[in-house]
Amino acid sequence: MSHIIRANNLVKSFTKGLRALDDISMVVNKQEVLVVMGPSGSGKSTLIRTFNGLETFDSGKLEVVGVPLYSNHDERNIRAIRRKVGMVFQQFNLFPHLSILENIILAPMKVQKLTRIEAEEHAMHLLSQMGITKQARKYPSQLSGGEQQRVAIARALALKPELLLFDEPTSALDPERVNEVLDAMRTLAQKGMTMVVVTHEVGFAREVADRVLFMDSGKLIEMTTPDIFFSNAKHERSRKFLNQIEK
Amino acid sequence: MKMRKGLWIQVLVLALVFSLILVLVNNISTNLIRSGLGFDFGWLNRTAGFALAEHVLPYSSSDNYAWALLIGWLNSLKVIFASLIMATLIGFFVGILSAGRNTLLRFLASLYVTFIRQIPLLLQLLFWYFVGFLSIQGNLIGPFKGILNISNQGIVILGINLSAEFSALLIGLSVYSGAYISEIVRGGIQSVSRGQWEAFRSLGLAENIGLIKVIMPQALPAILPGLTSQYLNLAKNSTLAIAVGYSDIYAISDTIITQTGRAIEGFILLLISFFFLNIIISNCMELLNNRLLSYQKH
Ligand SMILES: Nc1ncnc2c1ncn2[C@@H]1O[C@H](COP(=O)(O)OP(=O)(O)OP(=O)(O)O)[C@@H](O)[C@H]1O
Ligand SMILES: [Mg+2]
Image 1: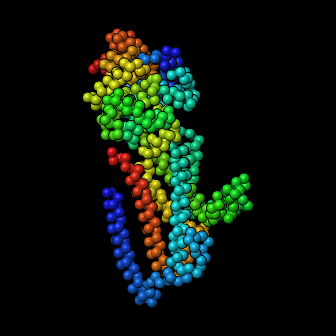
Image 2: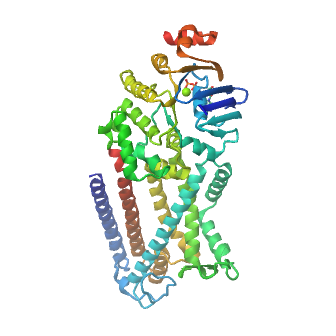
């Protein structure tokens, strides 16, 4: 099995007649970095959130980290997937009442039943990877946005996931804080982490992505290498989108 | 620091209220003396002469009125404290269900809340007493005999004997306040952003663990103020005890006033005892509040 995600004909509508996901079929391979792009409302978040069961789908079949998922949304399978898939949100979603360290060790202690000492040791290792060991005892509100997002990445890494999902991880950051987060993600990619990243950061996509998936109106328009996508996009809609974001 | 300031304000208000009462009492007492009735608390030392079915401390009809009032106050405390705990359990349980994802449970929870809020508490208490307890023939729960007995004599649970009057009041007050508390709990839970639910779920945490470790600590600051006011309401509502014949502070004061004719003195004592009750509840909640909110200072 070289693929980590396999989606077959995924369909989802929030409101009748309007498809947020319109017959999506795709594969994400191990150690691949896939960047998802598309205009607002095209279904990028919906797609990435079905990958860890935060959204249900109406029909089709999904297989993530070897666990199958159908439209009946089996809770046990979803939990099994979530234990192996980390997620990073646009708004960080750190737990504000817990210290940075507590944010990170909560899941390892409760899900993997690690002792506090084991969990803290691993957490400190992750924080040093993210370059924020000094903040371990602080609380989320005492950190800058960029630091908070790096904590969120460390928290998502705490269960040693096989796949990381990012939904616009830098969109809520001050411009001067964007790079520290992108750098951390770049390092992860170099270490071979499989990642699906929704982002508008063209530089990151060009440099780090193995493939770019372009969506519009819930449809997968094209999925190709960044070289081809950014210089020689096949589809009219992709070219229109690229013209817009270059402005 | 905040606590101490709050305490000072309370003391100040207390002093103000007492001086107002003193002026009032002085006025009334001159009037009473003028009309030959007199104003004194000497009767407190006289023999009460009535029996009380329920007493936390030893009591007999040869004890004095002051002791009878204290017994009444303790009876009030007993039923308020027990109802407060049960109402909280019911309220959190139902509140969590009504903020949850299960449609059927949500519907049942809202049915309970709507139903209970439509009916006056007095009617509910009478229902629990006359329909719920006095109409029971024999023992309601056969199989658990010895552990839990429910009969028209009340409830016996693990050897602890609860009278039918106490039980009806306890259940009535808890079920009633529980409905209001559940709405406060639901509101508090819903005030926590959706992102927090998604974050703990994405980490593979089970719903109940996420609720306890992530959602509730953030919901509590929004829940506590409403909870305090429900507790104070519950304490005040407990004076409806008289309707089911439970000897709380109000019921006993009522008897004493009828026997002695000392209505004004009786009511002053009643006011003071409720004042203390409310101060106890408010301060306990304030203490809890400060402990829970300490993390927000970061
Ligand atoms: N919870 C929801 N309820 C109803 N409709 C929704 C919901 N979430 C998304 N949608 C709709 O589904 C479609 C896809 O939304 P989605 O959030 O996936 O888009 P997106 O590509 O992530 O957009 P953006 O770039 O703005 O984040 C949109 O039409 C949106 O209005
Ligand atoms: Mg989105």
